[in-house]
Image (cartoon, rainbow, N blue to C red; front, side, top):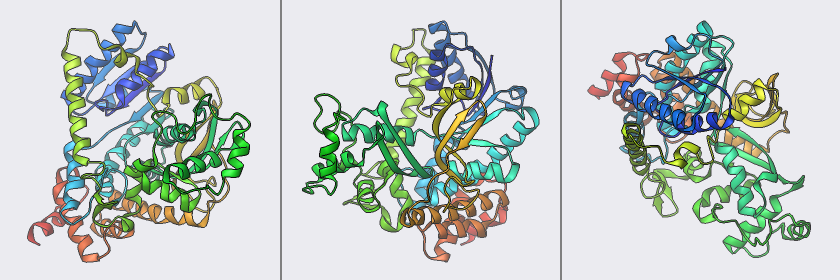
Amino acid sequence: MPSFVLLGAGSVSFTTRLVADMIRSGEAWDLRLVDTSEENLDVVDRLVRKMVKQTGSTVTVTASADRRQVLPGADVVVSTIGVGGRRAWEADVFIPREFGIYQPVGDSVMPGGISRALRQVPVLVAVAEDIADLCPSAWFFNYANPMSANCRAVRKATGVNVVGLCHGVFGVESQLASFAGIDPKAVTSTAVGVNHLTWFTELRYNGADAWPLVSREYHRQTGGGKAPLESSADAYLSTDARLPDVDGPLDGAPQVEESPFSWELFELYGAFPAVFDRHVTEFFPTLCREGAYYGKTLGVDAFSFEGTIERGDKAFARMQDLAASGADLPEHFVSGGSGEHEQLIAILQSLFHDRPRVYSVNLPNHGQAPNLPADAIIESPAYVSGAGFQPLMLEPLSDGIAATLLTRIASQELTVSAALEGSLDLFVQALLADGAVTVPSEARTLALALLEGQSEHLPQFDAGDVSKSESS
């Protein structure tokens, strides 16, 4: 019976879908739930036990607020932690707004993502140290954002082999297929970059290039006339590549008007960036000054951040109600719908049962992206089997795409150093390298404001740094 420790089990979006996947796998799992919030832990513990009972599953459940109690002997450890929860996340986004910086997400890059890293990194490093001490042979997976900075920090500070997982590439591959009107189950792709800016450089359907179909639909929606690749698309369509009776995108497929920025990048670079505009815009702050976005403001009336927080609060309230209710859980809740999109249970089956398959994962760059820095955390395809993770060696990225990633990687490296060392100067340097702030004095003022706003979660920083904000 594999033992599975889930850190940050009070997650609104992850835990119940993971448990649904565990149940559907038919395997016996020893699930150990951990959350530092006793309220959150109680809710998710009751909810998961109801799922197990209602389905007659053989999954066993343990809950603890102390990870060191449940880590010994673990086979798998997964982190979905969010230090400070949604209230700290709000400060990541709202404090920069006072400086004219708007973010729709604020969990990966720009000031919000950097601020989040400062409080996430020390906790994840401590987790990795406990894993090295109590279950050194366990597979360690991280879901917590900012993905790239967190995984880089863990490896740099501890050497523990953490693997980062995100559903973005898996989801966008399927959506691009639906956009082009082809069967997502028969599509393969190559996507490489940093988490939340991962470039689809290849999209193939039954071994043939599917970009002509994507290009054709893009030009149809934008009224661009005859697409440059339309003639090859016509030839491809003659091979019955499209699904039966489909002319144009499938229902639910992404529309160009929903993510115009990403589609502009597709037209410019000949590759598609995941994960659509809500995330991708944050990697280009110089192009979206003061949140400017096609006549709207990012995080306000375009991809409302307040809306995201409200949905999270409501979802947790719903979890509380379901956990407290004596009634059975709704069937869709127990079945998990399409499941946990990071594909963790499938990955574990590849590892434990030697079922080779390729997945998108976040690992150090050891040659899979030859024109990006060594050891930077790269999201790219990896072959997974009983032997572990083997990143696929890819062709160099185009100079243009590589340039979009190099600045991100530089800022992330500075962010990691700032978080590990508790350095205000490195924090300021990370902000400047990121590009949302361009004046050193303004970057320092913002850094101090964020340190003050998150001081309870930043013990590694000198209290004197925060006092500078109060006296400025």
